[in-house]
Image 1 (tube, one colour):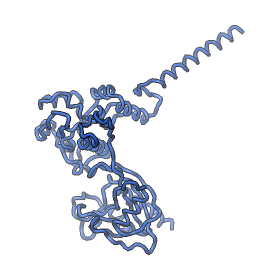
Image 2: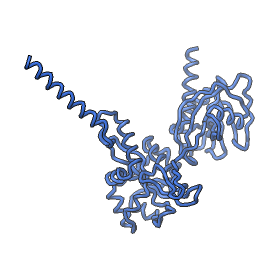
Image 3: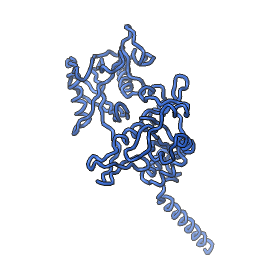
Image 4: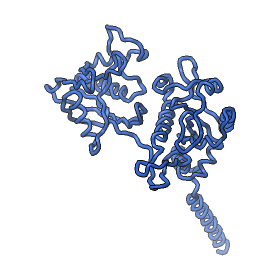
Length: 369
C-alpha cells in the first residue's frame, strides 16, 4: 500500500508540474513562441505584436528585409520576360543610405508589410517621398538605380510580369506608402500626424485622433441573362478589352444596393439573384477592396442603354465568344485582330475569375442538359 501511495503522489506531482508549465506557456505575453499553433496563426500573432509593440518592431527591423520604392514605384530587376523584386538587409540598406549622405534614421519611414514563416519581418521604404515632419530629402532616382542594379518601375506597367506572391506584396506596400504620404496632417487640427514604427496607424499629438489605413469598397459585377454575359469598356481601356461592370459603394449602401444602382446607372438594367463570388485588394487608382458578384436579369429585359458618361461601350457576349477570348494568349498591349476582337482582363484581375467562373458554370450546365 505504501508503494502504491508513493506512486500516486509522484504522478500527482508530475501532472501538477506539467499543468503549471502549460499555464505559464500559454500565458506568455510575447507572441514569439507559439510552437503548438499553426503557421498561419503564429504569423498573424507575430505581425499583431509588431504593430502594437514599438520596441518589438524596432528589433524586427534589425533582422528584417526591405523592399525599396521611389515615388511609389517599386525597385525591380528584369529577368527575361519577368521582373524580380530585390530586397535589402538592414546592413545593405544602411550602406546604401550612407553612400547618399543619409543615416539609418531614414529607416523609420518604412512600413511593415508582412513576414516569413520563420518570422523574418518584411518592410517597405520609399526613398523618393518626403515626410512633412522630416527634413530628410528625396534620394536621386537614377543614381540609386545604377547603384542597385535595377529600375524603379510603375507598378501598373510591371504588374503582369510579376508572380502572384510578389504582386500581392507590392500591392500592400504601395498602398501603405501612398496612404501615409496622403495622411501626414490631421483633418481636424491641421497639425502633422506621426506614424507608429510598423506604419499600421498615424496619431495626431494635438487632437489625439488615431488614423488607420483604409480601402474603398468597390463592387464588380458580371451580369448574365442565362445564355450570355454583359461586358463593358471605358475609353481608357486598351483597344478590344472588355470587363465586368464596377463602381464604388456609396455611403450607407449595402453591397447588394450598390450592385443594383451601378448596373442601373451604367447600362440601364435591373438585376436579381445577386451572389457574392470573391474579393481582392486592387491598388489602382488608389487602394480598393474589389467585391466580386454575379447577377442576372429577367428574360426579355436585356436591352442595354449605355451611360456614355460612365462607359464607352457595353454589349452581350455569347459563351463561345467569351470561351474563345479566355483561351487567347498574349499581352493587352497587342492589337486584337478583326477575326477575334474581344480581349478580357488578365488572370491577376478578379474580373478574369468572374468571367471564367461564369464560363465554367455555363459549360457544365450545357453538358448536363
